[in-house]
Length: 183
Image (tube, rainbow, N blue to C red):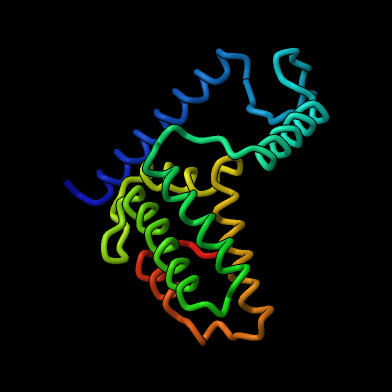
């Protein structure tokens, strides 16, 4: 087969395909895909923006005023321990016992989070579902904001006393070892 025969065959097949597609398109009335916008229709099942803002504000207010439990006694004990240790440290930041109690409570709290997320030795190998559940457990404002806030206030209280973070790198090193996002 010569080159001209191959070229002729390819052109003939191409023209046949083009003719087939053109005739099919013409038989459907020459439809052209056009993007157009239409206004959304209201749906009674969806709340308005104002309603959802009010619901969110109400939920945030309720969560900030209540210390509900998730029913897990181990998590409740860790939260209570962290609350007590951070309150004690906030009231007496120079006491080495209070400092030791805060570091131990924070270490246990972060270790529990790391275990929930599937983290070992600073490497998180857990599934996305595990990471999401652990993040939700720590960031749920109603039950867990109080321990996080208490630990943060204790840390800030230490800075108000004129002590620098470099004075005690232990809590930060432990958090970095467990790959916990610190904010």
